[in-house]
Image (spheres, rainbow, N blue to C red):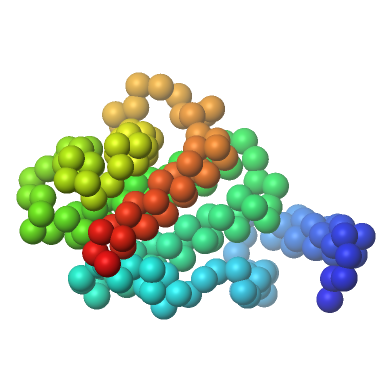
Length: 190
């Protein structure tokens, strides 16, 4: 057990040394004995996430969103518990933002079924949600920002280099937007 910051630093140093030794030994090769146990207790469970998605009326969608949120926890672990940096860090952040955009899209489409037609783009749906008072104008604008960031999923359409395009502030903003949309839809249906 770790009881203080000094013990934390010692434990991290030991883990770092051993993980590097494993990598030095294996290189790019796979080996069943070379798998590191992912720490238990960080990833939240699908039932945990489903409890906050009561406004979604499809059990399948609710389950699939909860699985996507577990993947987001995995990205969050990489960002917060490792020193992954440079391009790799930005690509983790990019993929987390893309996933949050997809989660928001799913929540918005399901959460406006029977209120807003299926044929609307995500941004138009956000506009209509704001016009109907389901979300605030501020949240609408932030959803537009998220969707614009999410367009990075289409690598072939990018006209700019992605390095330098994603940072931790973008990730944190996307997390807040996703939670705010979930909360707004939950409130709308209570």
